[in-house]
Length: 538
Image 1 (cartoon, rainbow, N blue to C red):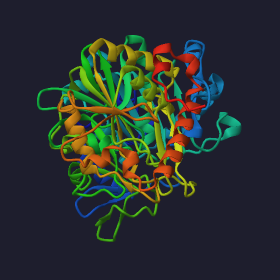
Image 2: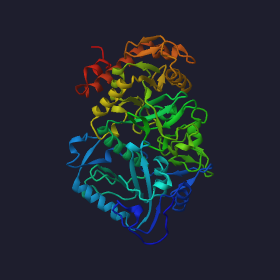
Image 3: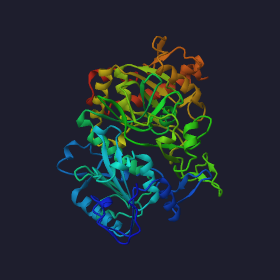
């Protein structure tokens, strides 16, 4: 359904209700993908790939501007916000100034609006209205969130409004922010202002932050994870930071995808927050990730910062603009998907890490205490080539709950919710390392995705329920002695290293990193979780 019009000026429109904007020169409301692609091409916002995907550039920002994210300090919410580097305070008066300046900027311009849902569970759904100057940003949001049936659009009243002005430059002296870029959330006003950045991931993650705010008081756990369903209806969750394989491993031909990034876990089961996928596509191959590769080559998909030749042929190995190249497409583009966006109570929780030090096992079984420890730790390692400014050595990264940048409440709130869910439902938990084997980054090699998939299939199918395990001496993890289709020497990281002494040294160093990180939140957890902690040997 489209409310687009070429009437100028266009005043007091229903599609602008709740935004504080009364006038648009031309208003395009709830346009579908073909129309939005046409407008993006007309406006010079991008070009088509040879297969028809929309290729766009995001300018100087090729990722989220973490240092420019703020939460408004409001009396009704200030006591519940996890203030600090993740959630910086912005005074109400400064937000009022910034919001009014962005609204004034948007007044009278050609605007695109989209009315969308976040949350496949109607009982835990947020109605979102985006207003933006960018046709391709409207397409991104339409791909990313849940598209209401046409019959539900008349009378749509938003719960949250996003004022999106990518070309507006904030002024720190006036607006109280850090730079010309600002991403600001007001939970009291239910308004999000995004200014000074074209990177569309800010739209997605702002609403994820909203879901992380509203759901815990309802007893619903919001999660930074992918999810899928097996042939017998068994649901599995995959927690992991960027680059760990969360999207790739959940797109498994033998299992139906629920979603690739953001979900809720309630008494009714699991539900996707979104209606689309936002996949990293650097070095993507048709052989290893056929579903994502195919979706990235379709009309309607948005490709961020992907390199293509003049004829539009993609080079997914080219990181000229950024390593963080992305494809945004609706879940319908994945052939084996649960279109309801919902699944039952999870039988399995998988925590993914890409250990660039090469010392964690590729698969380990976790007891509930260990699962909580690894959830609160949120470990992975970054390497040169995936992040700007990194040297030759891997850099350990700990992001609590596998999603610290998106947590408006204190991490222990989410941890206690997961702990209760695992205990209540007897969910089995696994740690999977998709990083390096046989040595650290630079000397070892990346874990075979075929081996990782074989291990996951065995774990999720129950084939390891009665297998023999041994306990790793460094990390206290239970490692299976045999998995069908995987060489036994791959399962034991120490055996995979030619230099055993070098492995012991590297493993001890990572143990110390875990212990040092745990010391920052040990006072917040109970004795059961402390018993599952990795400890350095004195």
